[in-house]
Amino acid sequence: MKELEKLRKEVDEIDAEILNLLNRRANVVIDIAHIKRSKKAKFYSPEREREIMERLTALNKGPFPNDTLKVIYREILSASLSLEEPLKVACLGPLATFTHLAALRHFGSSALFVPVESIKGVFDSVEAGKAEYGVVPIENSNEGVISYTLDMFMDYDLKVSAEVLLDITHNLISKSGDKSDIKKVYSNPHAAAQCRRWLGTNLTGIPILESTSTARAAELAFNDTDSAAIASELAAKVYDLQFVEKNIGDSKYNITRFLVISKESPPKTGKDKTSIMFSLKDKPGALYDILFPFKKAKINLTKIESRPSRRKAWEYIFFVDMEGHIDDKKLRKAIDNLKDNCLYLKILGSYPYGGI
Image 1 (cartoon, rainbow, N blue to C red):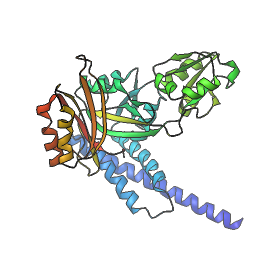
Image 2 (cartoon, rainbow, N blue to C red):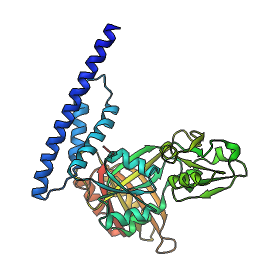
Image 3 (cartoon, rainbow, N blue to C red):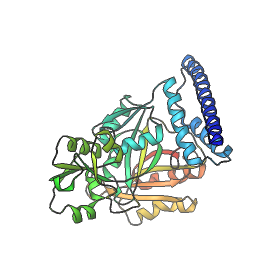
Image 4 (cartoon, rainbow, N blue to C red):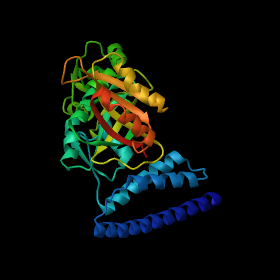
């Protein structure tokens, strides 16, 4: 026991030292903020944050795991930025949606999150300057691309500045936690689609009512005692709901990709991808002509998705992700070669792979 007490005392001393160092770091950050303010420089620097993360994970010799180190420093960086100037981030609300979770993952809990009612609302907030950044879902590993988000990119002159990959776990939650009390289920359509098999087997005949988000579904279930909601664990905590069943998704491999949107693109990092949208002229071999410059330049296309254009019957819009940054000469040349074969071409942005 004496040895245990000795080790605990050592841990306490280390904790006190960590606290002192965090406050010392905070004071330096405040000094940096004064300099930035005097020079009217931007407070948020994602490239600086990435540099810090990469340097620390490279220095780390263990046994403390790098994944946990990143989570801790995500919060340290977020708190430090809030000492300079709180960063406003628009996301699909109310809070506790999966979009909010993705925003938390990328920006940390000290950012000022602005919940809006729709994906369009996220784009509106960023374009109007009510938020510096927005987070929107773009595709799910099971359900595919979210077409409405693609449509918004056609209507707004905003850039993709980052991506966030989030493991999605759907849960059935209610006021009582008792399945026998459930007369209806509230859910975002995409969440319900990802739980079809479980719902069909376990809640036969129970109507699924549409909500704008999983958090809104939880909010409705909180006010309706004979209902349940499909939502995240965070939503259960926020709305004080009980678990009827955890992890009801049809696939255990369920990842949603979110895009961070802003008015500017980030600088090149060396581990980037570029997203573009285009529509084709109606002629034989048009798609081949579009793709050939990428093959010739040996550029790897990581995704290609088509959907009907809203502007003309039988016209299709293509959404393409590729490896590389728009500042890469061969990638820029390949994209420039598309213009003669396109009715419409838009570069959505170049950004780092997989977030910070």
